[in-house]
Length: 209
Length: 209
DNA sequence: TTGTGTGAAACTTTTCACAGCC
DNA sequence: GGCTGTGAAAAGTTTCACACAA
Image (cartoon, rainbow over all chains, first blue to last red; front, side):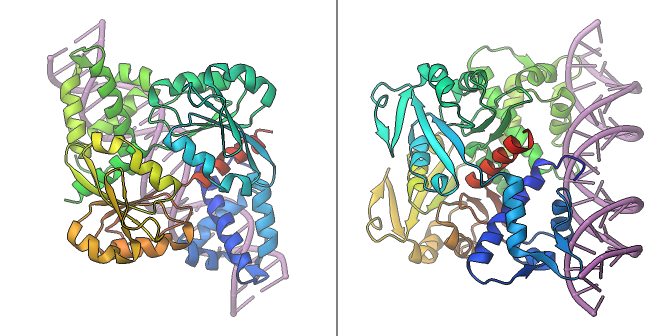
C-alpha cells in the first residue's frame, strides 16, 4: 500500500478481475489461491501476490483469497463500480463500432455525447447518442462534464482534439488515432494503435526469418 | 546489432517511422538528428539513439541521420515494405470496421479472407473480402497461407480460434477479444483490449482523487 | 501443511556521460 | 562545435526464497 503501482500492474489487475468474474459466474468455490490463478492466467503466482500486495493484504495465509471478497476489492481499486461519463470524438468506422459496443453500458460507462466534423452526421443520433459538431465541443463539454474521452478521429486532427479535451478538463483519454499525442501530466492518456501493433507482428515475422 | 531488442523498442521504431514519413512528405531536410526527433516525439534523444543502435550505425557524428536513409533502414528493419497476407476472424462491429479500414491496403497488408460463424454472413463479400464459415477455417487457411490473423470474435471462443490458427501455421496474431490468450512461443501474439484500457483510465481517475 | 506477504536478488530498461568522428 | 554510439550507472520490474499465519 506504499509505492504507486505501475500501469502494468493495473493492467494485470484487470485480467484478475475478468477471470474472477468468470470464475464466480460458473463454479463457486468460496476461496481461490494465487497458484490456481497462475495456472489459469499463465502469470506467475508470486507476481499475482506481489501485484495485490501493492494495495494491501487481502488473503489468508494457508487458505488463499475469498473469491467474492477479492473480486470486490479489485473492483473497488479499479473503480469499475463507479459510473463514468464518456464521449466519443470521431464517428467514422471505428467510432461507430464503439457506439454499437454493448460493453460500455454493462460496465457503468455512459456515452453521453459523440462528436464529428461531417455535416451529414451532425445532429443525428446513433445508438441513442447524439452526434454534435466537433467544433462546438468546448461549449458542450462544459455542460456535460465528461470523465473519459475516446479519440477516434484521423491522426491529423487528433492532437488538436486532445488539446481541446484537456482544455475542457477531461482527465482521461483513450486514443485510437495513429498519432503520438502529448497531454499534461495530470491527464492520463492511453493509446491503442492498430498500425503499430501490426508492425510489431511484421517485425517478428521478419526477424524470426 | 547484438542483443534482441525488446518489443517496446520496436514500438518506438514504428513511431519514428511514422514521424519520418510525415516529415519527408512535408519539409525535406536531407538530414535529421536525434534531438529534433526528441523534441517532436517527446522521447529522449539518447533513447532514440539507443533504440537505433540495436540495429547498427545509421548516423553520421556531428551531422545526424540522412532522413531518407533512416526511413529506408527503419522500413527495412520493421518489414513494412514486404507484402503480408491477413485474415480477420469475426465479422461483427469491430471486424467490419477493420474490413473497411483503408490503412491495410496502403501498407502492403492484404486481407485475403474473413471468417464468421453467422450463417447470414457466410458466403457474402464485404469490401471485396469473402466471409467464410469459421468452422472451415483450417481447410481454407491451408490453401491461403496467411501470415497474420486478427481475432475479433467474442471472448468465449477466442482461445479456440487462436488454437486453430496456430494449428494452421499462422505465426502472428493480433487479438481484439477481451480474453487472455495463450499461444506457443514461436507464435507472436499481441492483444488490444478496450475494456482493460478503460479500466486503466478509471483506476487513474479514482487514484488521482 | 498450505499459501500469503515481502525483503532481497536478478534481470530489464532507461538515463547518463563522454569518447570519438565529422 | 555538434552529434552519434555506447559502456556504465540508475531506475524499474520480475523472480526468488522464506518467515509467518491459519
